Each structure stands twice: as structure tokens, then as C-alpha cells.
Image 1 (cartoon, one colour):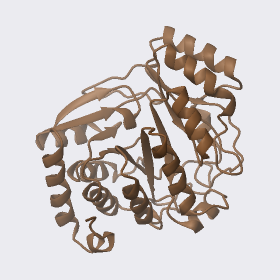
Image 2 (cartoon, rainbow, N blue to C red; image 1 turned 90 degrees about the horizontal axis):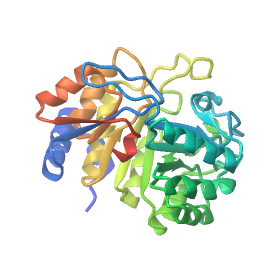
Image 3 (cartoon, rainbow, N blue to C red; image 1 turned 180 degrees about the vertical axis):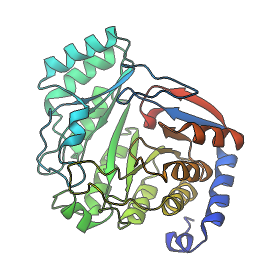
Length: 321
């Protein structure tokens, strides 16, 4: 029987960390997978990533109908833009020549919250046939999109899970409810797609609002992979300067996610604030039993090694390491 979230929330952090760490030791080998995809340059004492190993592609350029409060389209600036199917095929071929192994296909959303993928399924199949690993960030996709993604042979689908209706409206400018995110996850699992839901921490202007409901919904689906993403306030957006939740609170969320999903591959994703609390945040996540982490500090790697974990680096998205 699934433990009650309210009961777990009432426990002290140290107790939760002991519980979650023991679950990790029981169910997984002592390995911490480190993800360093090409969207950022990563140079550390332990590893240097390759420039084109794994890239992010936007099928909408810098266009997005939602213009969300945390992003204002700025996240799309970090992606390679394509405008049609042929451009995606040609881009894929050029990237393969440069040693690319895979890509995240994403983009801005429509007013209904869906990334418009309809004219790209043949190109996705083509890239798969060329040996690229393809993961797709879909937004609130309908059932027929789930079926087309399955037919295209994508390796994984990503979906941000929002557990609070006010957050959906005020941050994402969407007239949707949390159940719509649950329904999209169900569409993916019905098609036997590899789903990696993303739980967004602090997305409501730095406050913890719908995160625990998001955990409930994700736990109901039982995905193989769960990614935790933390608000990283971006310059020029309404959240510029917003304080993110303290590392101890994020550690509690991480531990509870691990406890409720003992067999899921749990990862701390690439989005998190570059604050003074960053190292503590990463250490709490490792102690809470994550399996993977994107772009960690050297101090975090050494901390993981001191806990007896072996480190494996891969220049790919954290959800598929």
C-alpha cells in the first residue's frame, strides 16, 4: 500500500533521508549516472562534455502561444530551430556528421498546451532510422499524438506535471486542470511509451504549491523514470529574482518521491538555480536516493563517492542515462 504523503511530509528530513537512502540501496546498484548534454558546456575535474553529442531542437523556433511566466520564450533561444520536416531531416544528418548521438525535440506550445508535432512524425522516424536516440517533449498531447509517437519509434516522451490549477492558469496561462496532465500520462502509458514525467519544484513563483499533488499523480502512473526540475529564475522574466525553495524543502520532496516510487529511476534534472544553496541541494538529492543528476558540481561528485557510489558520465539527457 502506498504510504500517505501527508504522513511523510510530517516526518523530519533526516528520517526521510534514511528511508529513501535505504530504498535506493535495496533496489539499485551503487551507481550515480551523471548527465552532461551539449546544451551547456560542462568542464569539471572529472569530465568534459562533447559539443554535439546530444542537442535540443525546437519545432516552433522561438514561437510559443503561452508565453509562460517563468520562461517568456527564453528557453527556446537555447534550442536549434527548425520550421519544417525537411529542415529537421537535414539538421539531423548534419548533426550525425558532427558525432551527434541523440536529440530532444521540443518547442513552444499552442494555446491548448500542446507542442505542435503533427508535421514532424515522418522526420522523427527518419532520424531514428539513422541511429539517433530521440526523445520528445510533448506538452498536453491528445491520444492520437501518443499513437503517432509510438509509431514513429521515439525512445522516450517527456511531460511537465503541474499539480495545482492556479499554477496552471497564472504561470502557464492555460485553462486546464491537473487531471489533464494525468490524462496525458495515461495516453502515453496506454501506448506503452517510455514516459519520463517532470515534477517542477517551485514553479509557482518560488512557492511549494502543487508539487505533492504532482507526486501523487506520477506515483499513480508508475513510470520507469521520474525527473525533478527546480525553478531557475531567468533574467527578464517575471520570476527574475524570485527565491527558490530552500534546499531542505527540495530534499524532502526528493526523498518522498523516492519513497513512493521505490523502483523508478529518479533524476535531478538540468534546471536548478545557480545559488549559494546549489551544492546543499545536490547533496540532499544524492542522499535522498537519486539515480542520476545533470551537471553536478565537483563537490557533489566527491560527496557521492564518499557515500560509496560509482560515477558514470554520459553526454545525453538525464532522463535516458
